[in-house]
Amino acid sequence: MPHWFFSTRAHSHGGPVAPVKVLDSDRLGSSSDLTSELLAAIQGREVFFATHGFEVNEPNGITCLNGWLDNLQIGSAVRIGILWPGDCIIPIFVDYLLEGRDAIASGKLLSAYLNANFGGASSLSFASHSLGARVVLQTIAGLASNLRVRRTLLMAGAIDDNCLTGEYSGATARIEGISMLASTCDEVLELAYPLGNPIQGIFDSGHPYYHAALGRTGPAQPYPSAPPLQVNWQLPVNLGFGHHDYLPPGPITGAYPTTANIPPNNGTVPPTTSPLPAATPQPWKAAFSAAFASTRYI
Image (cartoon, rainbow, N blue to C red; front, side, top):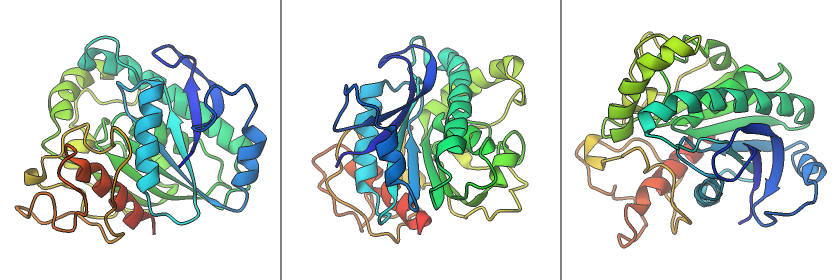
């Protein structure tokens, strides 16, 4: 299924942040301006945005987001992927510091674009992976008051665990329902994030010198009091969710029902509700995250 995309990339691989461009996955490379077509499509409609994390170039971002967006069960909501320059050129724990700035810059550009153009949408919802959490929260923080933010899902958030009550408390207050997925099996957030984050705190305002990542053990207490933070975010260890398991490398050939919640500890792997074949490496994980997003969206 073709999907709309917003891109804040200047180049398909690496490069700086650039003004928002509208893309269509079926018409990549087209010189036509697709803005008016998209704006007509979102009038009076709910809109669902999803974005990737760092170490993702434009072709890979389109592929993984297309596969994940296809698997969502969110009715007639318009689905839009967000592409931003999160490519890693040097080792993750160093380049992560620089990519955080690109995430912030992308979020500011996106909020300005939405403020100017999306007043006709009935609501906005967001999902993110990894450092994409910062893109999403920065976007929401800059939205005008007339734009309704229904739902947000932060998967494997590479951002401080107190961000919802600290740096992005203003964004938190705009969201009607906040969900997340976290895993202590996340090797990237276990190793790269603690190494990089103390250094990032020196360079970027709003960051304490050290905090755990939101995507490992969920939010720090005290939890946000309003809007409701939806409970159940910690994925059982036996499911083995690593950092790159939430989004698929391509299409997903099956779907969980929209009653997906965190499976019990020490349950079956994959969970017994999985309709997916075992031949593709771990295909059920991205299908589960898409079903979880769909369940929390309703």
